[in-house]
Image (cartoon, rainbow, N blue to C red; front, side):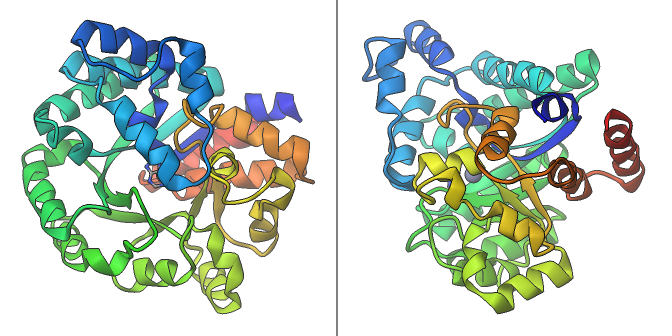
Length: 331
Ligand code: ADE
Ligand code: ZN
């Protein structure tokens, strides 16, 4: 089974590029850019990665991102993730970035997007990895700030496929961002949002009905509403589930209690993703391996999860069919 997990070509649909910042690169950049970080050693950093909920993680994640200053830093960050894609057999990836985390520190939008997109272009050239970029609005900030970010992004629209919504979920419901999502839709962006990670399933309804999103990031709290489950199944709305993240952030107490198998058995379109792999002890293969070792996932389940990620990707139908055929070949 572990051999199958490793050999299957995969797509990743829920990955925050800032969440792939490994402690080694954080240290190198903190020295190069003279940015203080509150750790004395790599071991120190790993010890600090002991979270009790989403917010305790976000505080550390935003502090870590402060070492990213130049275009090369964003290139290196993205390139290191691409090398993990090669290791994990990820052949298509859709990466999130949080422009406000950087522009609020005086880093230009252009610096961030150019570093990331140059690395992704090189990934296509060197490894044939396809990708797209999704810009997330920070939901703990205001809709006005999100609108200003959307405005800034328009000059770089050719690099950005969609918009998303992330950061502190509780008390920052999708309804706070109706106008900016409507504007993004008018601009032709694909729409996704984190919903039902920590907050209840009403956030998933809001994301679907008020923001008109196409994919739900996380969405595991849907289990509490039979009516919502029925709708997610009928409409085959993708849920980009992140098992390691859910365990590390205490959304579930253990892998045994994770509900991905129930969601899958119910016929929902769920996939497996790594969210912030440098912080959550592993990349996509490790997420699958942890599930396999802890819950009763069959080979057929793993293949369905992998195929769902390709089915739900923002790629044209021809490429989708070609990737699904590659999964079948590997099987
Ligand atoms: N930003 C990075 N990872 C996140 C997550 N799991 N939930 C919300 N915001 C995030
Ligand atoms: Zn996320």
